[in-house]
Length: 257
Image 1 (cartoon, rainbow, N blue to C red):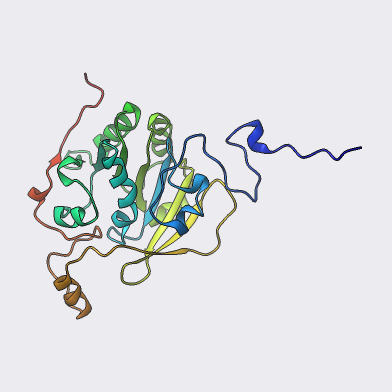
Image 2 (cartoon, rainbow, N blue to C red):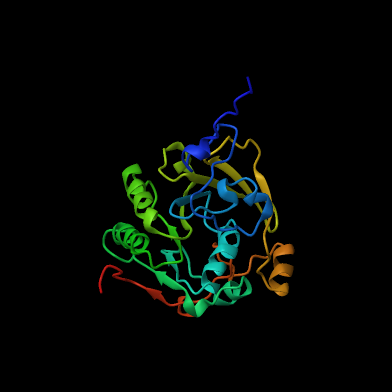
C-alpha cells in the first residue's frame, strides 16, 4: 500500500498552521525593511487587516525608525498615513531624512479634550473601518482595557494595510487581541532590541538586534557622543522642533460624506 501523505493544515484553511511553523496570511504582508525581522514574522512582514502591538519602556526608543520603511512605502503607493496622538512634537526634517513626504502626513491630536483618549479611540476605530487609509500609527492611552483593544482589532479587519498601536511595557502582563505583539528596547546607539512576545507561530526565545538608520545631524551626533544632550532632541527617535513644523488635526470625521 502506498504511504498516504499527511494533509497540510493550510490546504484546509489559510489561517491554520502546525505549532512549529509560522502562520500564513491570506493577504500579502508588508515588508518591514529589516530582513532579520521579516524572517521571524508570519507572512514575512507586518500583517494587513490586523493590529501590530508595540510595547515601549518610553517613547523614543527608535519606534518611528523601525516603522518608517513600511509607512513610507504606503505613502509612495499613493495612500494616506495617519498618526494618532504622538507623545511629542515631530521633526519634519528628521522625518524627511527617513523618506517621509511630511506634507502628506495626517496627524490627529485628540488628547486636548476633557476626557483624554476617548476621542482618540473612536477616531482610530473609524479610520480602520473606513478602508481608505494606507497605514495607521497610534499611541494609545495607558492601561487600556482589553475590550477596547479588541474593538480596534475587529475594526482592523477592514483595513488593507499595517496598523500599529503603541502601548506601555507593563501591558505585557495583560492579554491582547492583537495577533502580533513586540517589545522594543534600546540596545545601543542606533540599535533596537526587538522581542517577539506573541505571533502566530512558535515562540522566539532571543530578541532580535536591528540596526536603525541614523537621523541626527553630524553636529548632533558629536554632541551626543560628548555626552551633551541638545535641547532639540526629542523622545520619539527624531529631533523635536516647534509643533508648527507639522500641523496636527484635532478632529477628523471619516464617517461623514
